[in-house]
Amino acid sequence: MTSFHCSPLLIAACLAALLPASLHAEPVPLDLSLPEFRDPLLELDIAYSDSDWEFQRSSLRALDVHDPFEVINRRTYRFNARFDEYVYLPVIDGYRKVTPRPIRRGISNVFSNFADVPNLANSALQGQSEKAMRTTARLLLNSTLGVLGIFDVAEKMGLPQETEDFGQTLAHYGVPPGPYLVLPFLGPSTLRDTSGLAVDWSIEDRANFLRYRDGMNNYPVAYGIYAIDLREQNGFRYGALDSPFEYDQVRYLYIKLRELQTRN
Image (cartoon, rainbow, N blue to C red; front, side, top):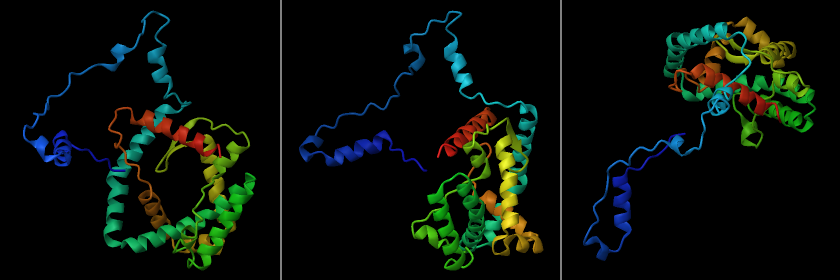
């Protein structure tokens, strides 16, 4: 979301235009000097005795995540960042230049339509019957009226995609997330979510909806297009947080996001 900032001069000009003309005779000079910096922590009543360091400790514990493989995870994170910078993003830029937006949208819709197969299976496994029925309706509408999913007519009819994966299903039945993992190319995960990802892929293989998997196996280039589309739909960019603690922040945000997703 793009934020909009008004300068003090612009605000003053707008206010002057709204005031009566009689008040314009003697303009009041604007004080554009910057206010003196005030450290907000100075107003906190903190006694720095041996037992009062919880203020600092709490800030560190806020980002604490079970990460026993941190050394390997950090190396994988750096590898992913370099691969993203030198391979993935340049390929995506080329893909966008040679492929018109409507075609890219249609390709993305097709992959999204097939992804509703594990969404449906996991909704049913979690006992979410209403969500399962809505996902079934999406599959039927997009696979027929939407021409094999090229057009997402279901969303236009008030049926947006409702994502459910097997990692969420495992969480629904009380399976803990386990240690944090960073997967090559795929990024943040946990032991539970990695296992769930493998099951979701297996569900797609076994269902072979509209002979989708057979088609991809017959034309391996489709896997490449799928990988490009998957990255294009993900707005995350390494280094975007502009922080030396990006790894810790991404790890924390991923875990919290999954906690929210598993509470439905």
